[in-house]
Length: 503
Image (spheres, rainbow, N blue to C red):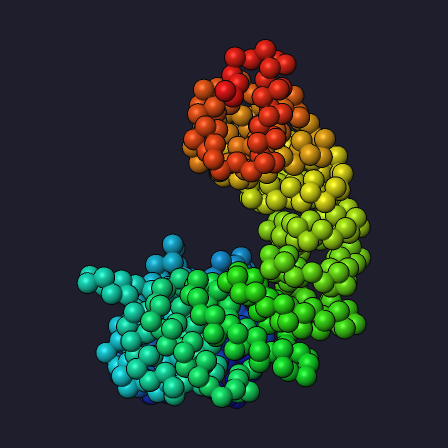
């Protein structure tokens, strides 16, 4: 297999010797397939040959030793990761693999990984730690889990096998296991506690590579599994390092994101990461998502670092375009700068011009639109074309049922604060706002009332007895600012000679 230069050669050699291949040979074949795909060393493929190789493998899988099971499952998972959800040429091995491993509505993926799970389950006690971590990682990468008739999931069984001998796992193995559980959203507090307790009791974390540290912390934050001692252990280790030169942008991004998401305050860690980033010659190795995560994390954690924010803003503003920035990425970036009160007009101008240039905002979720509008208003960054683009998009929607209460409140507040009053927008949001009155918190109610009074848009479908009752129900929750906003709204209602007023 090692002599094959292309995937086609590997398929042909495997197919020609299929009847004589041992489990170890089949596992080796499936292990190299993802490497060929990753290196783009593919030409024309033979669909029939591939089908016979996978069928033969699944028929023989119950005879595989743990090592071969783990290697094959991991190979399958990497193939799925490479071809799932992608538009591929109609002919060639990649398209064939997509058909074989995914199928319509992922039925082939479910079948194949179901076979691998059934083969692995009875043999879990025979797996060495590395083999077990690899097979768990494989199921996590493929995002495959199943529940038995008794309510027990595959990941429940895998966790029982892992915790029985947790001390024998290498750092990368622990990282892979936790990442897999977080990725498939498989809740298992006992596993996370056992691993965290084990890591906490170690003398040091010198054997943990940056990626392992990042994945572990990311997993705990993603799975919402709290363990303050673990977070402190990891942060103390990172802060004590001479430098972070071995940490890749994704590692730095995931670590910062995890600490902010888990609400684990650690100023020294954020300063260490920020100080390292500002020493770099440039930020071209950072992907948009990584840039976004870092500033979002700093803003969420309340960790100010003006030089970091300045460098990132200059980098983004100087890019040729923002086509690689997803709506969520753009939203998080401007939200972070507004929240951190970091005035960077050139950044806001760059983001606004990009959004205005788009043909449509269909890819922007309600939260993205609300956060972007809020950020520009909160930062005092006027951009009439941006506000018009967003309001025109919202008004043209068939319905506004996807908008959550806070998103509507933030939108209305943003337009009123920025002075960009759009009568059509306020009128279109009024019925939806009225239908959500019971779900608003006191601040949302105050912001909505204030916004309509500033915009001077009556909103008769919103301001009625239902609105008054919603205010009275939350009377004790309003802040002084909120009461002031409601007072302004009440004065406005009196000017309109409305019968709907607060008592």
